[in-house]
Image (cartoon, rainbow, N blue to C red; front, side, top):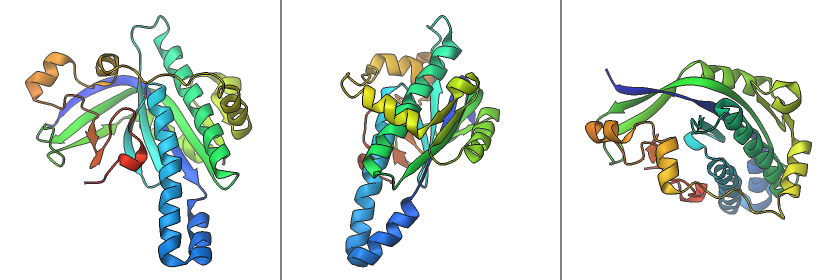
Length: 239
């Protein structure tokens, strides 16, 4: 059986709309080559902003699925109300994503998403190794399925978060713009220090990681992408 570990946290799926229409418009205006280059640069900027916000609030990008991100915010067990605090981090992250993407795209793009807290199973398929391709990271469980359902229910510019109630758990692009604009004068949340992220974001504890000869940070390399805390999407090279 593959090595696995059950983790408590919030699964967040964020999806983008507007890329297809943009690609068609740019090809028509600039031609195939120039249009493709401009399209790639725009996609890179948008995904970079989304990734940056996820890491800033303590999450990990588990998977890139086209123009969607599948993320995991592990429950911070050192908090008195760990579930509530984790969901609050997810909420603030989503508000910033909604606001920043809206400000960058000038209405051309819209984010929608769903988030659910619970226990997920994290599996390593292949030989645990720091070398790309030797091991594949997979996450499964009911929170992932339910987050996907909330994603389907959410309209453009909406994010639904289970567990916060209607007033706090239903986010709109308008709220995101207000939140993002209000926080521009303040410092963005700093990325967690390596030691803190190691303890909170690592699927394996120190002893288990050594025994399994797993990644120094098991979430550093997943799904054929290099995924490092704070790294921009433009630097995430498919291998």
